Image (cartoon, rainbow, N blue to C red; front, side, top):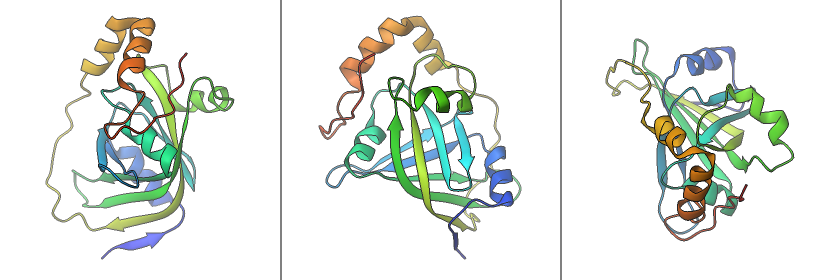
Length: 182
């Protein structure tokens, strides 16, 4: 049975620390719902009511567009190992970019630099839902996929900036993402 709470508890923190993958969902008022898998140890707990992740350049920038439009975001993790659990964080999100005043204080909290890093997504938690996860299959983690970071390293900072200028300025529904040029 689903249970709700409004702040992260020690058991939640332990569960989050074990996860290798998480999912981010957002949607505009009108248009496509976006659901993206994330990894690379980019998720961080900032307080019992605030989380965030380091967003690395991808083929789109849907979450940023949706957050700019309405702020709604859901983050989900689920156990693929021994104890079944589905863990959802519902919140209001925003993007922090390298040119923003908060970047120097927040960015160091997310680990070493990653090739192609684009922005931080910060979410203020409104509610937390846990549910059984009995239908989630077992999977074994075998490692991180290097493809995205290798691509970003090969393109270099100028190449990634050009890529973001071409591919990350608007969502697939045509909404602005708010992405600033370096």
